[in-house]
Image (cartoon, rainbow, N blue to C red; front, top):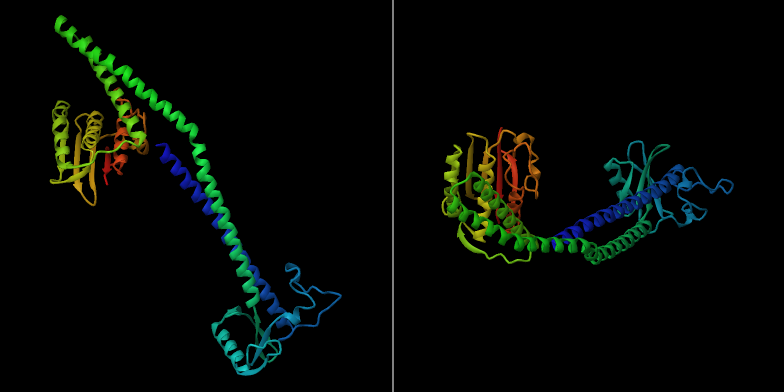
Length: 409
């Protein structure tokens, strides 16, 4: 159990770390790309304002409107370092002229082809290959400015990749620390659990012998003095105590998790049929209706004794807490895996915390008014199902009816 808790802590912590670091990396990438686009758009708009060329640099007012958002990006040398070209079209949409003075990798034919493609696209700004373009209204038609963004994109890509490497490296170091520190973190719990397990084991040994002697002496006294209701009460309480000790011991062994499960192939159908047969007399005594829908020839590979105990616990729970003159139903069918369902009449099902019924020592007071049981039977059934890589859950099977479904893998 402690190892399982440690694994869960590592998994949850790992997911949290990866989620946070992935969010940070995604935010950095989005912010960097947005900044790149904004800077390139600012550059293209400056060229558009000059009708395809840079306006003369104003030394008295060196930063044009908007340039304060990009410190160091726009300087007196920017017009000489920027690579761009401009294409104009007249009012009829025909090619008018092109300015290729600030670009060497594009000829006039390619420039017109690029401009025509972005005009068909309909968007006034965006990326076309490695160029950031901007469509603007010219004096006698329309113009398209293309600014080379290959260097800026390469810089942004390198930054994002570096940030990704640093982020992933940091996440990996944190995960390694979590794995190493998790053992120390669960050590107090492990020590407490070991003491608890030892206490249960010692209590089992200390109580088992006295309980056996008490029950044996009751039989002897009854033979000598005759039947007595007081002796019946003592015997009943002694059996309840013995049952409690047995449940606690079984839970302790199952919680250890390192006990081997002796798996064999057995008939699940026969297990259910035997259990129904064992409870038939009690069901008749309590005047309940029993329905058994057991699919024939259902086999399962597991620990037969444990599975018999699981089915018995569910049947005992259903009979014990079934409403007077109610009904109990047990069904077994083979889908992808064996599915066991036990239902019983329970008018208070709507008020129950169904997700807590299998919790250890939990008792739903409204439904469990019989004064019997310790609230560990269903938790033991849950532990047995878990050791067989299965699951158990409670559900409301219609109005005034509760059910438990067990799926074994």
